[in-house]
Length: 212
Image 1 (cartoon, rainbow, N blue to C red):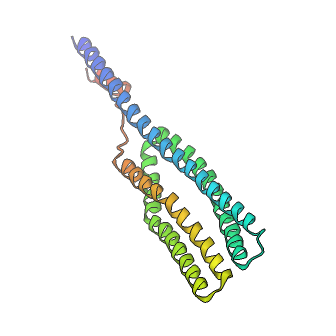
Image 2: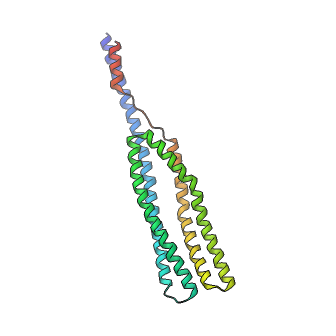
Image 3: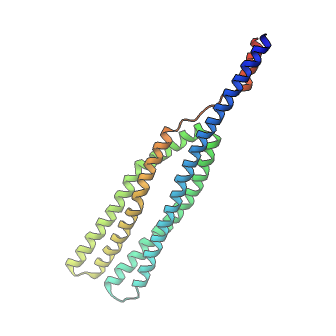
């Protein structure tokens, strides 16, 4: 009778364990997909930065063919700032790809560690996002200010530099705004993620057999 009871308990525990394990795996796999979606979007955003920087730098180079002060100011500021944007975007894309692979794997291998590490990292990113957006708006405002000053002072070189800076700043801001919202949503997903622990059916069943 005791053996029958132990067998019955072991079967129930094994069933509950398999169901709990399945739920745990589903939850962890769902988080893994969330991580993949987030970092894939970040890599795509890096392409936008690279593209915008390359286009503005290329346009600046073309403008330099015109031998005027305004063209020189606009051209060189666009080449410099656009080149920096393209290089920065490429570097960020590589970093996002590597980081995404790491956290995607960690979410499945060690969900608890994933939550701890990624929660801290994305919180820091979101805390700094106002600096990113603020600096882009500041660049835009400074460019507009320089352009206005150049126009009022009849200084075409300064007007060109200001125009180039304003174009670069507003473009970066427009690209970054959706990223800020995406990072905020992702932080909330990570915060709500609860790593699941499956029941160890073998150990529990063995202890039940000994108890009977």
